[in-house]
Amino acid sequence: MTRFISGRTPTTNAEAFDRALRVTPGGVNSPVRAFRSVGGTPVFLASGRGPYVVDVEGTEYVDLVGQWGPALLGHAHPEVIAAAHAAVDRGLGFGAASTGEVELAELVLDRLTLTGPDGAERRGIEKLRLVSTGTEATMTAIRLARGATGRPLLVKFAGHYHGHSDSLLSEAGSGIATLGIPGSAGITPETAAQTIVIPYNDEDALAEVFAAHGDRIAAIITEAAAANMGVVPPKPGFNRLLADTAHAHGALLIADEVMTGFRASAAGWWGLEEREGVPYDADLTTFGKIIGGGLPLAGLGGRADILDLLAPLGPVYQAGTLSGNPVAVATGAAMLRGAGPEVYEYLPRVAHEIADGLSSALSAEGVAHTVAWTGSQFSIFFRDTAPQNYAEAQDQDVFRFGPFFHAMLDHGVSLPPSVYEAWFVSAAHDATAVERVLAAAVPAAKAAAA
Ligand code: PLP
Image 1 (cartoon, helix red, strand yellow):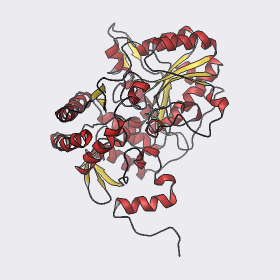
Image 2 (cartoon, protein in one colour):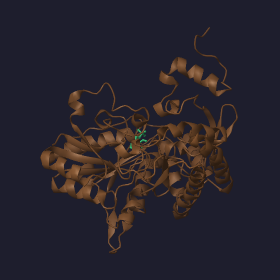
Image 3 (tube, protein in one colour):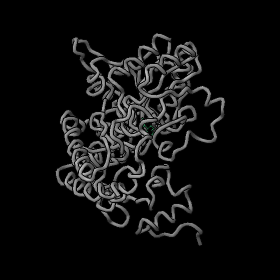
Image 4 (cartoon, helix red, strand yellow):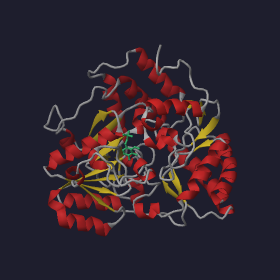
């Protein structure tokens, strides 16, 4: 007789949640999934294909969560799945060097090498170390920055989220913003004191912090374009200023491209750098989400002289049993190969169709709102103007989001269950999927207005 194993797959979301609550804290393995900020029972998903996901009750939704980023080509893309199957058939992992890791690194480096307007070739990164999660990538990046500079302090921006390692949770976005908490218990004051948090897009705060602590700062870490407090792009030239300020003081710039990489910015192939007209020269860049094609894989890239400080060459330690897992690297490579220029041409178009339709529906109901953008990545704020920092992002009619979210869900559209998250479209979001979103937008706008 077993105490916990029922031997039956749940057939309703309520049953699934009930069972999850008995064996998992809060019933989920990542906090935002619990629907705490929107209320109600979380949806338990059973499958996904193209722009759709299906829950355990058999209800289909147009998905605008996109696995929180990786599903760039839609769910279960045939070429990505075929690559995963082929890799699985060769073995699930070896804990030894394998050629797929090299191929993925070559692919990433190649994609991030571009010819600038002056005709000169520019490499976004020179080397890449693969890890399993974005959290690991940013955690290693700051250890490496401290190891390279011999300095203790880190500068981050309020509302930016870089994963859940101790140094990076102060005033973070994503789940920390959703749950409305300033950080996390369990982090020592000594550790917290090593991270200086300043407002985003604030040149004066940046200058002040470097004037006061410049010779003790190892690095600035920034989302290449913030998207974990809703989408808040950097002011034009702000990333460049970060690089110049860091370098003038002997510190490094870490660009966190876990979310934006190969979606909104790709560290320079298109996107931010081109929009700003000047490369911003990050010393280290973190990737995740898309480069794993939907499996646990992330990466830390950057200048070769800094990356070579990692073990086994250098004194900065980092390792991982599952790092560079052969199934994950094969899946990631298939995703990147499938993401050609036509995908990046299509994504902003379909994203704008969806956002414009939603915006019209909200305007028709007189709901104050604005849509904020970085490339094809967008989110809706229930306020009149696009925020430039975390304080402004929080200053919105948050109470409207819950009813809006649930009306969308009831009409077959799955949104990120928090007002502080970006929405993700994919290359598989076709006219039918868009129509379904826009049809749902009408009752959702009414619910938001109520
Ligand atoms: N950095 C950014 C910008 C992210 O958006 C995230 C996750 O959403 C992370 C880091 C952490 O990545 P992971 O959830 O894979 O640990």
